[in-house]
Structure formats: C-alpha cells, structure tokens
Length: 344
Image 1 (cartoon, rainbow, N blue to C red):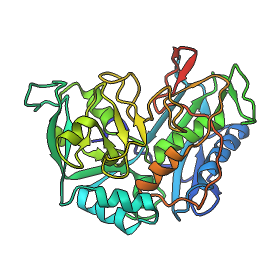
Image 2 (cartoon, rainbow, N blue to C red):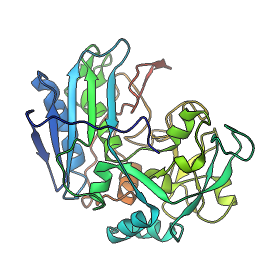
Image 3 (cartoon, rainbow, N blue to C red):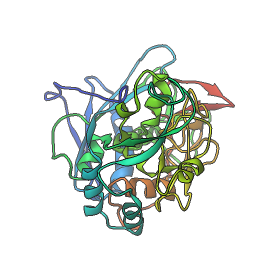
C-alpha cells in the first residue's frame, strides 16, 4: 500500500516540457508557470546526473516547481504508483536481468505467486492491534513508482505525470553545485537529484506501516520494490529468504543474495524506528545519495550502494557510471535542525 505517496495530476498539456536525456533515460521536466530559469536549470542538471547513469530507454515525466511554500516547508514531493502481482514482478526482473547482482537477486526471490515477510503494527497482529511484535505474513502484490514500472516494462510510455517535486523559494539554496557548497546554503541540484531518486523507486512501504498506527490489516500493505531486498537477522531466522517489512529499531539491511550478505543498512521509520523514513539509507554512515540527512554546505556522492539498489529494482546501469557528486535531501522535506543537519 502506498497511501500518502500517490500522485495523480492532470492538465499539464499547455505547460512547457523540457526533454533531458543522456544515455537512454529521458526526463520530461514540466515547470510550474512562472518558474525562474535558474531553478529549471538546476533541475535539468540533477536529471542529467541520473540520465548519465541509467540506460533504460524510458521517459519519466516530472512536474517541477520553485516558489514560496508554507511556513517551515522546504519542499514537496510525491510519485504516482503502480501495483501488480508478485509473480509479474519476478518475471519482469528476470527478463531485465543483465548484471551479476540482477541474476543473484532474482535467484534469491522466494518462489511461487506469494512471499513471506515479517510485519508488525497492523490491525490483525496476533499479539494485538498495533503490536510492535513481528509476525510472519504472506503477500502476493508489489507496488512501485510508475517510473520504476516503465523501466521494468510493466507499463508503457505515457504523458501522465510520474512525480511532483517543488522547492520553496523562501530557503537559501546554492545552485552552482561546485566543489564547495556555500556553508549557509543547501545544494539545490543535489536536493533535486535525491528527490528524483525517490521518483525512480527508492521508496519503502515500511513508511506506511510506520504511520498508520495499526489501523489496517497486513494484507492492505503491499511491498514496494525496495522491500523485496530488505532483510534482518530476525527475518532470516524465520526462514530462508524471508524479508523484513517491520517498523522498529532493529537493523534492516539491503542484500542481493537473499540476505546472506549485508550491503548497506536502511533507516527504519520515523515513528517506531530510528527517527528517519525507511525510504532511505541508515543515517550517519554516509552510505550514499539516498541518505536521510545532510548538513548545510555539504555535497555528497553517488556511491556503489545507490547504483546496486537501482540495478536490482529493475534499472539497467550505464557501464562503469561516472561518480556524480551530489547532495541529498529527504523525501519528506520539512526543515528540521538536528545536530546541525537538515532532514532529507
């Protein structure tokens, strides 16, 4: 289930569309009316960072904006979602497998038309509604952003908007993306690139579990693509290949071999987890582009962790992608100060 992350937008036919393409991935950036050119240019540069790394011949439509937002709100972002059967996803991943990580991760997927996972904070938890105690649940559906579905060939080309990203002009941004970011500003290009990463599919359904407070049953929460590769020591103790869809403080990690090898830790949830959205890497470890926080004046790199995750959720990487250096900002862009850092 992807409540709170879905986006349905229509009526953009009259707006300017800016094609951005390197390699095969193309972005149609659709500016809000009156958006300043320097902000459009910043989004264009951010999109080019992704286009230089991903070779899939698909077009992703992103509505972009730069204007004054509400008090304390640094930005707004959301993505359109698509849900299909687990078996369809397994077939699509197998068809699109090109790398060693692809072949390993597909081979490690649980067989059949459904899969087992650990889950908690549901209305039908055997230990009581909203109990934090994990239990094994069976799921047969997978959700993903429409951009991710396009890359997997599950949906065709469309003019519908795949994502919306807006930043507030009330905040100080550095639009240069140079070697040194102004210490009192946020790297706009890096922030935009991070949000594009969410639109491309770095989204965990654990954030839904974390925010619904046990009001919905387990079967209402379909896994997202990232969650098919999210494991914990406890989930693996429950059985080979069982994934972890819980919101709590235990470590959850990314793996491409069914949990045998931990590649990088995930954040575990704002409410019941470590205080960061589960749709990110673990905070404070400098794991990659999709980290949850960033300091003012900071510029960060894509890492191999980022490339490997987008590879196994269905994208084809450009061989030996260049290491783009970018800053990251969170999917929920409410400005907060915590140890001199900004929540991404």
